[in-house]
Image 1: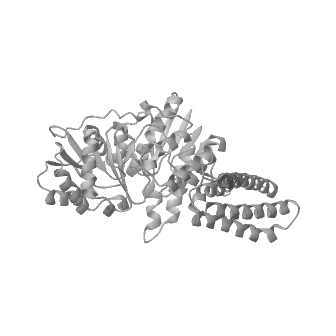
Image 2: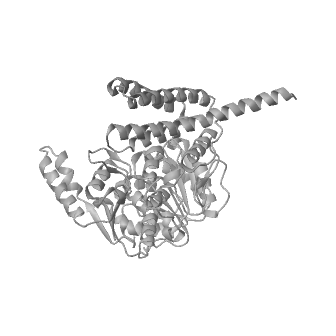
Image 3: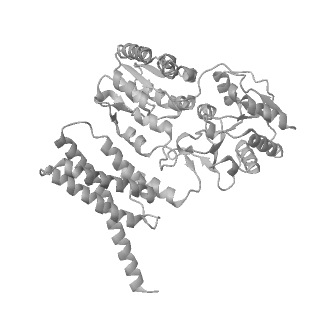
Length: 490
């Protein structure tokens, strides 16, 4: 059996894919697994014994000609056509797309054996997005910063492979040990991040390390990072005194950094590749989760790890970060408000807003059949009434089309109804998880004749109506219980 896995995202996403790829190999020990990735990030596959072959996407040949002054689209197209032809000729029996991106969906479509042997985004014959499996539909609807999902990305990848992850799937790679020449325990600080908006400024790192010095942790400091993060390290070295600091920024390979992380007593940093390396080495982390990032999906998994969530680095109080470092490295109880890693799903525990808790429970009700939670938003039931009216109107219009009414006459009315439903998701975010589920299921409808498409659309409208009516019944019961309590008096 030949399996192709597409992972065209960054280094960290490749490391997050390791457990799922191992689980897939464990379930298919005789399969030959090929990983398609970008050349820049291919080193992240080093040490992943479950992969038999790594192929890199010819980004330079395909994309560079399109951004040059004398754009050569013909050359780019020829290179891509040749690459796809050679890839398809390998005769893969199954294609798993971990990337969830437009580019990867087109590649998946062009090389897939047939639609039944595909997991992850693909394309229909007429070029529209195809979402062939339930986990991909869940990802499309619910995953990303600001959404209610609490499944870790590693588990999502595992489910995409129809595999349950085990402890052995998180094992560290067998790589040569890098000699840090550090005596005693040390704490690794990754001074960069995978994206600029996640990265702390040099001044913030100086402030954090200055406060860390006052905690008398009894550990030296190892700075790690890529060559383009060299300026941050230089500022730290010039500004922080009284600490034993070992500088590895821009001076180690990816596998050597892996080894440093494995030897550290703790890793401190933002969402990044080293943070995901630490999940494989079992190294505790203090994840400084800043900006547009979801720690639920990409946070550290090692036992004893902590997460400090902040909208901006200004919200990260340096002395509190320093105390959290001490608590993490010594295995002490963290301060209130700091999130702790835990086994299972969700992978983190802490104090979270009631609205966030409600949306997560609502997701579980829709996707897993759990009980529907009582709403906490005062506008929830008002929005529910509007949704019932609008959805009922849409059902009427579609039923009329089935009865022979003109599609051209009904289409503008249906489009307006969909706009109202989308607006309600923004005005009353409590409803957003259900509405995104509803919208995604409609996107999943494959191309076909009008009768088939209309029939499937009506099925989704009626399923949506069933969820809405659950809350109609709940509101009625709540009102009845309140009236009964009032009639009984004190």
